[in-house]
Amino acid sequence: MKHPTEDSLLESVLELTSPEVETRIQMHLDSCAECRQRRQRLAEETAQLGSIDPQVATSLYPLPAQFRPRRLRPTSWLKVATLLAAGFLGGYAVSHLTQPESVRIVPYHREARTQGNPAVLLATCPAEDTAVDLSWLVP
Image 1 (cartoon, one colour):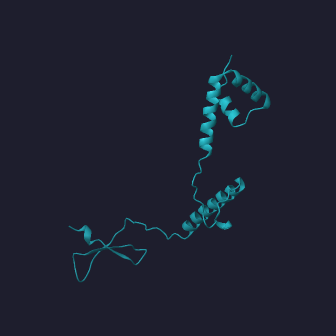
Image 2 (image 1 turned 180 degrees about the vertical axis):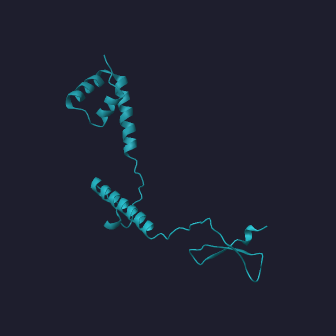
Image 3 (image 1 turned 90 degrees about the vertical axis):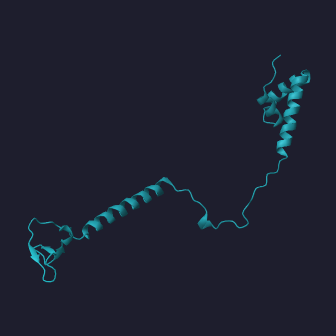
């Protein structure tokens, strides 16, 4: 005689089996004391687990609808990605359009002595009227 498995006995205890399978298990249990004990032990353990009342903390104040998480549809993700890409490209274009002209180093320098301190060297660019203090280069 073949004994029912623990799974089939547990399904019987939880009343998840079909009527035909339940009839076969009951016929076997009528003739097998060992399987009756196994089923009785499973029934006691199931009753003990079922009697546990977990303490679940619930919120006293439910979240308003605007703060509840929402699932985004795939088209929503596509819209967000498109907006981010457009913002990045727009920012990149604006930064290059508004960027000031970079400083250009020209090979032509003219040295001039200042009136107050003859050790200070000034280099000027003929295209612009700016002077750069190069005294820190002189040892």
